[in-house]
Picture 1 (cartoon, rainbow, N blue to C red):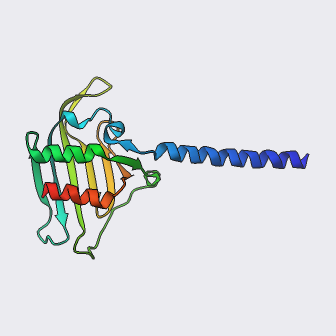
Picture 2 (picture 1 turned 90 degrees about the vertical axis):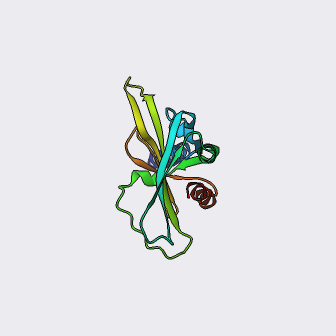
Picture 3 (picture 1 turned 120 degrees about the horizontal axis):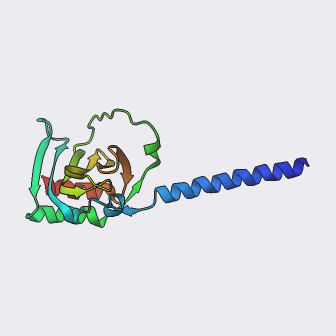
Length: 172
């Protein structure tokens, strides 16, 4: 009798471990930006704005605006569309304030906000403005979709630092 109970307990623990592993793999699977934010495809974007700061700047953040008919607009949309992003389990933890002390002359941060006009939401309402925001904050990548939820999600992408530098080079 004890052996049967023990075997059931082991099987239940193994099943729970497999369930947790499968859940993690599904949640953190690579997804394109249009899969993460299905209503906010970048072909509907009308303007890109944001800010950046490099470690060599002493005067705060530098703001930028890029119009839809510019070459930089197309380059940025292409760079964001060609990547796949993985969500992180760090989203399950409470998010506190972030601080950073620059120790490397090549460190930087940026936030890119994609503006949309009259995007129809599933509930029938429509929204406009910076509904999709992507922030690179000294090595950490966050994506915020203001249609579904108003919370930033930690994400990762392959060759993230190189990609983030390419974005910075365009918005400078």
